[in-house]
Image (tube, rainbow, N blue to C red):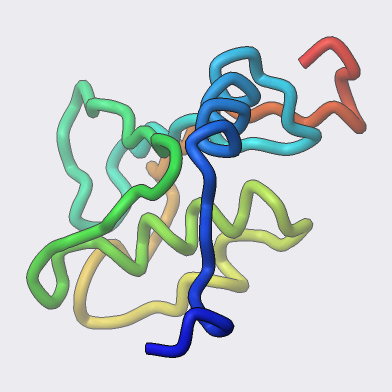
Length: 114
């Protein structure tokens, strides 16, 4: 591969980005999501889904909840109602009446101290 097309990330850049995450110096950063009774996430006491630096990979079978996680994450940043995003289907919860979603999110536009 031509070196002109290669992206080089220096160790100092990675160190600086890690520090930015640890110290919560982002303007907006989704740290974790906790979903209760959302589609395939039916556990009474759900574990949070954390988003770790630099990448969080979502791996699973069809119908395993990957798109649900991404949709719930999108709702944290978009002023849309979940019912507008999550269409009713034969798979998952059709009512959304008992869904509970909580976020651990940094938004310094709302709370400057994080």
